[in-house]
Amino acid sequence: MHGLRHGAASLALAAGADVKVVSGELGHVTTHFTQDTYRTVFPEVARAAAEATAAMLKPVSR
Image (cartoon, rainbow, N blue to C red; front, side, top):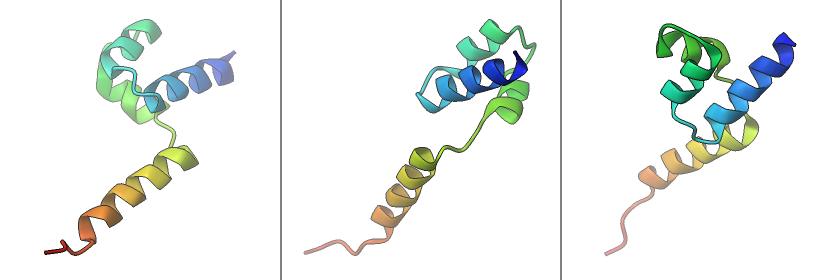
């Protein structure tokens, strides 16, 4: 059951669910605990972050 709980929380956070909502559903006192415990970096999320960072480094055309 713990694996299902962890997976559901991680997927909800990766999908953009508000951490306060996820934290409340899990019964956590703080959102910090939820973020530290249930944040999994999925490949798609990591790729999107890398692409957004790379986009900021591209020269601006004039």
